[in-house]
Length: 133
Image (cartoon, rainbow, N blue to C red; front, side, top):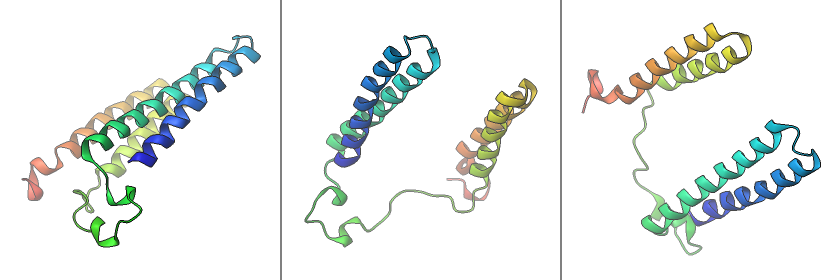
């Protein structure tokens, strides 16, 4: 995770001076642009620092070592649900929520309600039914 952490930290550190220059050149009169750039820098730093601390806690992965063999990365990588429809429902709910910001609040409220239902369904997918643990 060292490469990923460095990449995101560099991205975060790049956007802070860019936001400052943007604000200075615009005389701080346009409030959305420089604020968005500061937020992008903060997001890059948050992700980079999380990956840095996680990489220190977990240790080197085979991807981080130049002398690693392919078979070292074999095995279980996590738990995935290839039959799950909840990610599709969540994507449609988020899309309708963002559409509601442009079209009308009633569409946004519909999307927010559907988002809550989709999140609950996806989180509790393995707690009931055929795939309960």
